[in-house]
Length: 235
Length: 235
Image (tube, rainbow over all chains, first blue to last red; front, side, top):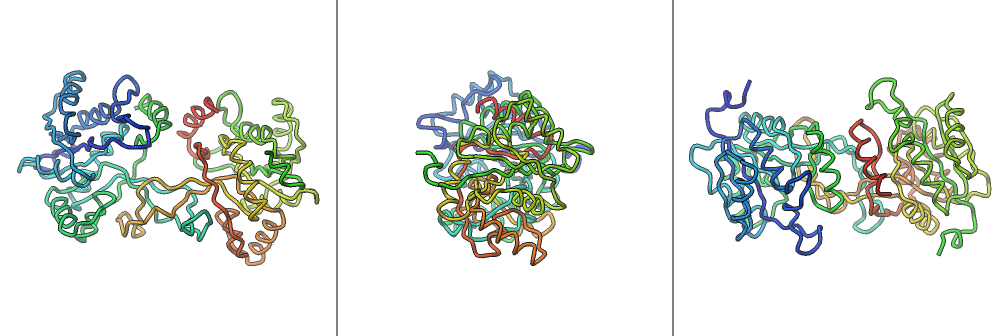
């Protein structure tokens, strides 16, 4: 059963591709590093191109990068409707700008890190199903390491029970009205949030955790590229 | 400057290789899965063979596996003094058995997961330096993911500030007297601990976090093998 049949409204993706990252070294745009024959962000885009449940894609990019992204669309023959939107100061501002570009016929939006290229269409679809039902859902992985809290320095202060801990990823997927209200609350209070589900906390909106069964890493440091290449080979 | 010059007592490693793991499938001994031309546990062993600061190695193995480990030593020409000790019911019992095998001239012990094959000699040495000074130290990595606590089910309950969170690994390294006292406390109270540093918490022993700068994963699920192979290629 397709998600489309469950949900008569359109589904959009907002791919946040406006950050530069700082841990790859100066003047390196990690989104354009090549892995398995194409830039990281083109893999991410491809996943949403493949996901049947996604009708259209908004790419939030740095000012001046619009042409580079339009060229990617041509080079890789991406066919879905796209819009290119300039990013803002913080990630939450970029998401906000992306949401402003959505048409009134879009009911569900999946927000994705541009630097997370291994997200599967099945995971995207699972978050859309849950968000359709609950209002908000996020891809996540159970924390499997033993976790300690430090004293703020280099000493262990206490053991943390990991049984209830999840590492959240993207997509973070919402009914459009829900994420708009949540980000309005963020802006009105002038706070910085770590991610879009934290914005939901501000308005009391429950968020469902959708377990990622396959690795879904974000490219952050150079060592991540070889790992991502390995994962992409098996996609 | 070598650690040996800092510490006139001997340093031993206790490699815990008695678990079977359950997430690799039935009847699979993950320690003997081949990666980069040798079993996982032979890579782990190699790291301690290479670490100049380690004088001798205790391998804690499942009853009946002693011959298989003796064959590994011959096959890979490991030269350091080894002892083969049978494991116990729980990991903490296996560690206890390993400690019992140490001679009275051993001052520092580095306890290592057999399934963690990418630990570098530099990391081993750093934990030994810190344990010599402080009594207890553990290899660890800052948590870089956004972490949420669930309500016990599939809903997010709250955001967790990751600034003070560390994922602990091995080696977990101690003055021998410290870990003996800590494990005596564990046994007297009849509790299960997640790891050896948690035992230190019981006796009020501070534990220093030593940041792993390179990935130091534990082989747990089949997908981990390809990643470990990639890391070993670059060691």
